[in-house]
Image (cartoon, rainbow, N blue to C red; front, side, top):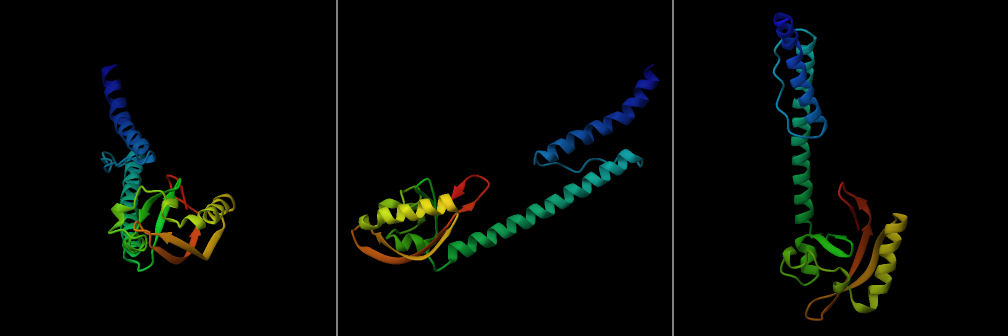
Length: 171
């Protein structure tokens, strides 16, 4: 009995470890390559799994590099770019902060968008934002007047559209 159990365990233990790693991989958790303990089918599965792990690591690295390039492009753009969620600015680049009369993005992030829109323009801006949200349309180059903290009015042309991230919709 003990000899059979040991022989079965020798086959099932690598399979159990591999199954555990595959489940972690499926959940998106970081995983290490599985040890290739045999040259049979289980070893072949472990090798194939290790190839998937390596491919995912390469894809994740490429994604990080792409995200960094995109982030830098947006941050360094001479055009004002901001993202709002539920009426509050969640991202703004330096050019956007300057347009709104702030010294930098940290001064603007978390603030209500409409607080920076000239009062007479707020109703039309709200209508356009609702249209974008409901219809998924893109609004391009419409005049908007922004209000600086000191009361100065700055005229700009705005393009806006909805896009989806993994976490929420943004306008």
